[in-house]
Structures are given as structure tokens and as C-alpha cells.
Length: 325
Image (cartoon, rainbow, N blue to C red):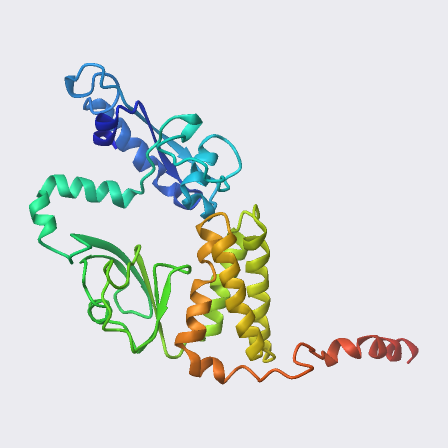
């Protein structure tokens, strides 16, 4: 961040720390103090006249949607953390109207790594479009979960071997809004040319309930949606209701068709990435695990949307009988 400030002439920097990671606050504050003591923050940094730069830690309330840069800036300004209409890019009009650079931690870390090792070394590893290495969080049904640094171009099969996956069946790439793959795609590679992973891989074995996985994802997006735009607010609720129909055993082929239609609507009309990509995995799962879904859906009939709940239907009658006895 200090190097970026030197290049751009920025005077202020912010580390936006989400509430879930508040346990890192003391460590970050101590690190900033250490940098100040060494003359790397403050005024005339490293003896360079007028090179003044300070970093402030800003605590967020824990909103997932603040991963969108415009929502993050809104939160920094003390407003509700929700994506703004993208009339300008932050570099044109960002925090308090000033030109602003927004990067995540990994970007700055990789920039430092390039400076340390040299661009020649970085460009010799990886693939044609994805140079260098990638940090991955690997979790799920693996014997060795954790943080891995892999070279771009590493295959899913190699990832599963490194993490000692047990009977892998369903793999989720890049979090709940990313891409899911089945066991016929384990040869695919993590790189811009194939699977452009943003940082996480979740491994599920063949004993997991795919519908439960998908319900967890959609429930997460339904809760985390800021509600500012209708496609995301209503769309995630509708997708959740469709999953509940699948669980109750009354989902039809028409429901699956409507799921895909709603995912398309959300993709092209939601304000930010949360709504645009929240239905990705559900739509892909329907296509990639077709045999699985064929076993749990029914062909649509005239009464396909009618669900009869016997327990609720006789509740008043049963209550009346008990009261008269």
C-alpha cells in the first residue's frame, strides 16, 4: 500500500476489516505502529520530501456485499454498505469524491512478491494468461484442509491429491457464487484459460446431500443481499423456495426451467456481483448433475403446483374433537 501511495501520490490509506475478522485488529494495529516507528508511515517517509502517507483501519459490520468496491466505499463513508450505481469507477470518483484505488490483500501481497522475486521469475511459471502462483483455501472432505499456494495451471486432480480428498464427487470452485464441477472434470486446470478460481475450493464426497449444499448457498445469499435491487432481493427468495420444493419432493421439470430463467434475470439486472452470480452454482448443478436431479423431480401435470398438507388440513378438526371430548 505504501508503494502504491508513492506511485499515485495518495495521502490516505484504509484497511477495511470485516467484523468476522476482528480478531486480527490488534495484530494489524501493532504492525502499523511498527511501520510508523521505522519511518515507513507518516511524514517524509524514508527521507523522501513530501512523501506523506497514513493508514487507518476501518471496521465493517460484517456485510458480505461490501466485497463490492462501491459498497465498501459507501461503508467507509459511514453510509449503509450497499453497491452504488456505477456511474464512475473509483479511480475517477471514489472515497469522498477523491480518486481511489481498491485492491484486496492478495493483490498487494502478489505485487510485493513480484518486487521480491523479480518479474522474470514470475513470468516463467504458470500459464500463458495466468502467471505466477495462486493462494487457495481448501476445505471440506479432505484429510489436509488449509491454505495452499499453487502454481497457476495446477489441475483439480493434483489439488485433490495434495489435500488427500476422500471420495470426491462435487467440487465447488471460487465460493458459493463460483462454479461447481463433477467427477468427469477433475482434469481441468486452475487458470484464466480454464477454471479462473478466485481463491477457494470446497470438496464434497459422494455421501453428501447436494440439495442441502445448494440450500446453504442460496440461504447465505438471501441473508446477505442488501435488498437494494428487486432482482436480487426477490430472486434469491424465489430460488430458495424452489429448493424447498425439491426437498419436499414436489419439484417439477417446470420448476427447474423457472430456476434457470430467474438466474438469467438476476444475472442481467442485479446491481452488483452478489445478485448477478448468486444463482450460478444452482444453475450449473442442475446441468452437471442431471442424473441426480432426474431422480428427485417429477414431470409437470395440471396440478403440479398444488401441495396438499394433510396435517394442516385436519388441524382444526382435530382441535375441535379434542375440545368436545
